[in-house]
Image (cartoon, rainbow, N blue to C red; front, top):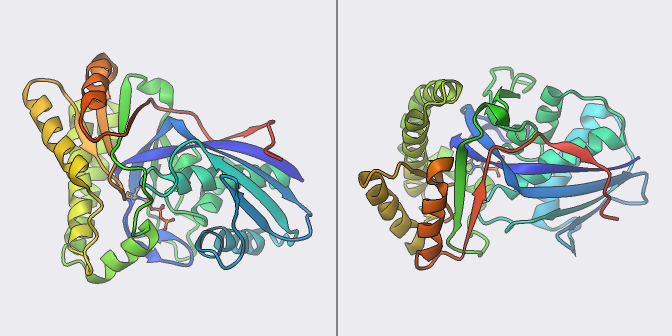
Length: 331
Ligand code: 2P0
């Protein structure tokens, strides 16, 4: 009843922002992402222990902490409801990237957790069912079950059984696609995604416009991935990111995840593109800028990003693998 798994963070090309059901973690809109080959979470679980325990990046986080109550506690309640299993579990997880700074740590973490739980309890869930389980921990984790390019379907069923992930294409379909993550700050963000998106749904005057435009973006990015049309994917993903941030900025109270480094880098990327270096940006719930480009331009863009004032770290990611069971246990 002990197992370990590794999953990788994904970066959304069409974003998820807002739930239609907070308990079941059902999104208002579908989303598409690329699972990376970097930003891994490694998780070990053991069932049949005396009490539930969570150790995240070396720190024990029990009941009463936000990480436990709002995230892992909810996931375990959903797991117990779905499987009828009642054993207590010890969970140890570590990330190789900054947690809660807009680098999808919960996506990698819950995809790894769902994969490890499936193995430890012998549940024999297939990847679609695993994506539903991962979703109960964190929405974006739905997509990290698969590698490559992935769509999380909104679904229409009230019980959420059709709000699943599907792989649009494996990593081998488009190995030249690159995401260059530029870290403008290692500080944890002030407004967590979960609280932020709930407030946006309630108060942003632009939220309806966001929802009305998502279907177009999903169709464009899906077909751009299928035909490896980098300009179509990059342009649509960048616009989609800006529309999401417009809903965040018009939330009451306002949610502004960008810092000065974020904005300076945005301007430079637009200039680089005008010069003929084809690249696009996307930004999630944090100040980090992810630059999309093709492998032929990655070295030049990495060089410019590393020289950029105020950038604390630069990491290159390619389309990465599925979440998977591994033999190395963390305890
Ligand atoms: C995304 N984000 O599609 C979007 C873009 C942030 C901005 O998914 O409440 O951590 O756990 O479902 O998954 C972040 O939201 O939120 C997110 P919960 P999650 O990647």
